[in-house]
Length: 373
Image (cartoon, rainbow, N blue to C red; front, side, top):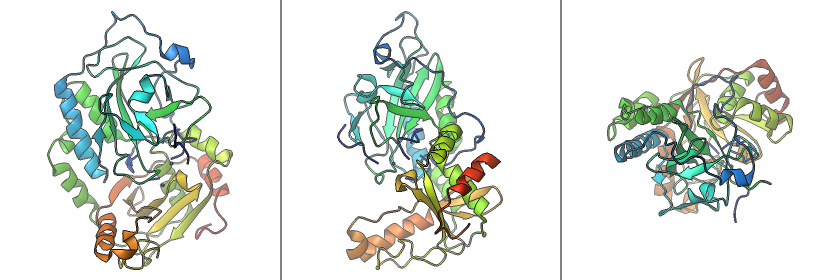
């Protein structure tokens, strides 16, 4: 890999743990459960390339199901303000220097689950047929072509011993095992959608139409210049925890905070400030009242821009943490259109419960410059 160096909605190879929406950005799973329900495999590189009894075939994946998955990815991606393309061995993509999907199954970057040491057997199998105890990749999708640096996702839709698993990674740097680390997605809509298609039940109704799912999401999220609710330190940290858990499991996140791989968490009240944090003087749009930004060191950990709208929901704006395109300064029309797009199309995320140990550890990592203490 040429470019795997430090995840802005944003996540660290150390947290990949990943690497989503936003990403994947919306998730409703418990913070106390282990993210991956995928059984561990032996980590030997040679084991990854071995094959099992070719006579033991898994459930077949049909062309019709592949078409349904394409519909799901298009419409689900729209609701996440993400645009996904499908990649195959004949039409590979470049994900931070890694060729997808080829790298994970040709031995160059062995697929690993949750940990660099947990390398697994894998095979490219668009028909869904293959040996047991092997992750059979039926499809690969990524938004790398349209997402900003450190905010890119790659999804592998796999079958393992007759069960569907949706794996996601945001890994943007190498590791000592040269593993490409994935975890099972925490986005329940995407996970459930793939499972429903796999079981022959078609695309979920919310994502079956050409634009109905997008319109529904935007109508629920529409909030132009609408004020949010004030937040306490605990509420801001719970929101950031929910954001980080999009692509990580609780134990890995806890370890990263303990080891200061994530530190200096800062919470800023951006009410009335420019959407571009004054980095672009031509943009006139400002954040509405009680809009908060939470970030950490390194910035690759991810930046969350949100409002609290109830005790258990936040409104998230996909505002980038960097504005490097020169048009932000010299193209007023384009810059204001982009800013309006960010602010007029938020999405709603349900907060995850956070345990006291995690909350206290996050408090211990608060920056001295944070607006909330």
